[in-house]
Length: 221
Image 1 (spheres, rainbow, N blue to C red):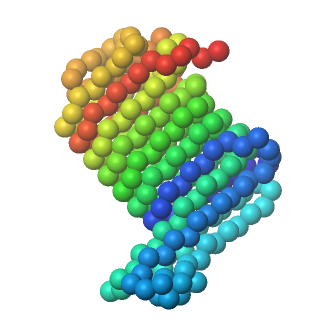
Image 2 (image 1 turned 180 degrees about the vertical axis):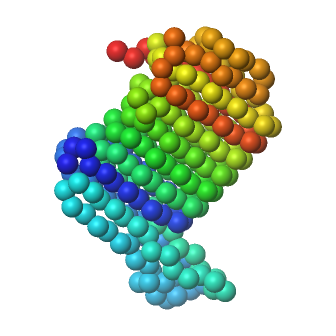
């Protein structure tokens, strides 16, 4: 359905989701197995499983963990999805990046070792990483706002120059820079807290080891 939900859970490998032109969810998954020999890799490939659940309102795709303890082998799955632009997505990864583009629905994206990148987004956003940066380019700030945080990495957010928002950006080891936008409120090297264009939905940005940049993009229509 147009307001459905798509979930992806991965452990090693890229997750890429873009808006498609139709009303279906299209999935391409690449399974990659590394081992000491070709035969061992082929056998390992057979052990790699992807679980899927789907109905009219919800699609869930999950990589099943396979044991690599004490073995010279490594598994990777790369997901490439096209989804209706208005659906909401929840994406979780462990070792790999997440890319999202062109969605109007809500986005929740979280990875441990890898970055999160989003562009042409207009729904509520929650994005986070432990070891990696978060880079977002949005066409509008939805009522649900934007939350982006990372521990080791920077946060880079571009919003329309005429967007209205309540901004809170803090970092520990780094600096906060706001470019092309006027913030009415508190501003220091490590913290900015105030209103942009009179205030609006909450935009919360946080990092420990890295900088934060908030940039003005083209005005929204």
